[in-house]
Image (tube, rainbow, N blue to C red; front, side, top):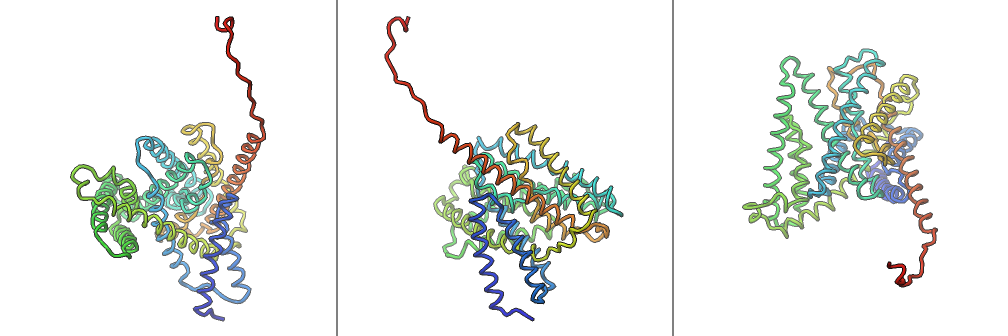
Length: 422
């Protein structure tokens, strides 16, 4: 049995409509819409099996394509919302430090666990496998924290975005060291790569803004997104840290008054540039929503629940999950203090984790590693975040109701007497 083109159109439209309702449910209940999309994909997979249909062989390629475009859109969406003001510098720096320490510590502990329990896993491969498992998923976090107060929401946006970027950089640094062998340039070469990427990012970003502000076509926003995706892909081919290009462009156009000063200010048409920013913000949000929807549904379609039915999978996964939250507790306790709810439990793994697993070099792949570990950690961390968000919403709602129920006391004022003044 084969599906006709109209069946695909009907299915795609229905999935997008359901995703919209999932977003509304998520907004009201704090249950992440991404988790609902994954469950929808799993249900659809059972449905396809029931009617004798199989997924096309190109499903993994489609998943990787959707994930890459989704990653670009999500990082751009986050960057467009980051205001670089003096009062924001400390929160941004704190989030960056927390993300970096959390990434390195979680990767190190996860690598030790994998090396200990997975047969044939040396430490080089263990670090490569552990890195994706240690990266926060901005694709899940950013749409899920909209209901938190402004300070906590901004912290999670900063932290997850930095975790994505630094995690990808760490993964490809490790990959480069593995593939280069004795000819590796080490940290010096990696630092040079990052500096070169940042320089290219600023030059390209300035040129894009100055050129596109003079384009009068009404279709220039998708042209702009195409240029950014092209730069990302070319940068990957040149082994640059391409995600920095997307981040720098988003920061530059969102903070034009900061970056266009002196002689550059005369080249900028602020009114036209603001129109580009506003239109780009809307299109980026819409595109990220569509791509994220199909990515996680397709991911759900590819999940084999049978891979979870293993004692070793459960043991290794639980050890890694336990280490994630212990490390996170220590770091947040040091940098944030006692108010750790629900931040402590907002540490899901997702889109980046899946994408990077596809990119593990053949030379580093280990037959003894079971994909169920990946699935277990992604699903478990998403569920833990869901429970924490729902509990926090109830706790906040209860506190507000108690505050509203308390009577406001007052006392009639009277003028003080002479004796009272004395």
